[in-house]
Image (cartoon, rainbow, N blue to C red):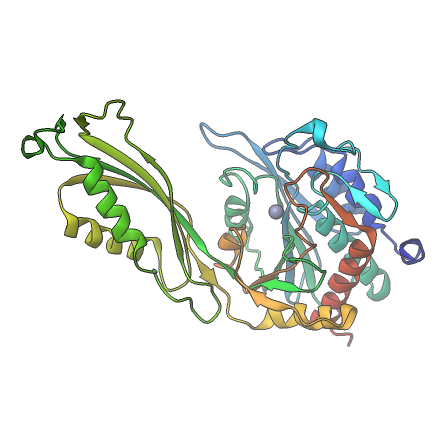
Length: 391
Ligand SMILES: [Zn+2]
């Protein structure tokens, strides 16, 4: 079945995905992945810009902006060629960077997250161009980074700034992350929760447990502060988001004696928050709660990303229509899961995220059914047809 579909493709998405998997581009390494993809796109008629970004103290990273068409609306596909490490290599039953097809499945690191989806989009464009020719009345671009799974400093954010500085405009963007939970077509993402970690240090006065009036127990105040954080929900959820959650990750006092009142106590907590909050409003709330308990304390914060929502509209409608046409399913529009580079792109144009099924991403024996690759290619091709109607 998959073979019959594949023979009609001007560009075989399984072959392309396998070639990308064979280039072991664990962040920040590229190992030829981006130049290979650029070569494929150039043969389709794209103009490709391979950009290396770096800054002091970070590893240089390769990125790609490719565009075909000089006029009309510019539909962008965004993704990443970098992959997470293989973890326990002995646990893999198939070599992680061999790009092996066994039975009806393609195996390898990046098959689902997300070299497979990049290959599907490139194959969909090849099919679209074969049918419509290069003068289809618009532009298609790919915004691909090698720094999504890592620190994301020399990746999409810098590439977007570079693209904007050259006068390019993106009108809509499909982010090809593996959004589906169980079945291809079950989920489109229209936003993401924010993530912030807090590192709390409470200072008291060390002393003898028999003489508490001469000491100030940092552990007691730490417990009261954490109780203030966890005893009431942050919210009940919003129209498109689950409730925000706060989890205490660790409590560290390091006291080895039972007769000492600790003078210092530390805790780390992580908050996944919806569009009811920003990192700034959360910090205000936490300050109020901690100040109500009083005493000396400090909190350091690390914000991995703010929450964002792209209200259902142009791109989620486009993807929903294409998914319905190919699979018969109506995808749920959700904001679950971790963060993605969509957190940078939504500042430039409307977007929605849709790719493969995420069940094996970051796992041992990452894999994707060939049937899903064929269907995702059909969905992306349908989206191109819908976005650029034939005149
Ligand atoms: Zn990814």
